[in-house]
Length: 99
Image (cartoon, rainbow, N blue to C red):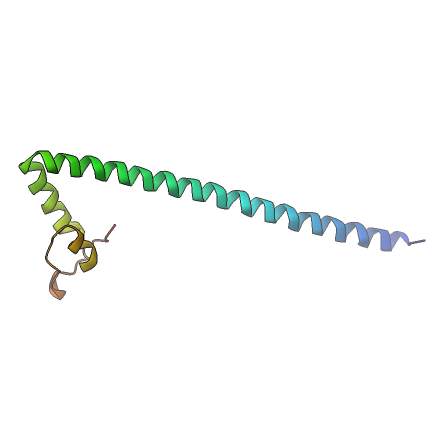
């Protein structure tokens, strides 16, 4: 028959195991929430981008304004290339992040 001390140690071990399981479940649920928010954020970006591209396709002034904004905003050459912009010269590389 286990002693009271051993029974207490066993109970502690059992509770620690349950805590680890709960922590794993918490992490899983947190990751699901983060993934869902990333998907929503991506969808918002796609819809906003589609709106601006549609406006640019219909109106020269909108197209020129969007091109100027992209020229200021995009710094990575691979991103600039997508929109037909010239690569940045090293002196032009600003601190503005590329989306």
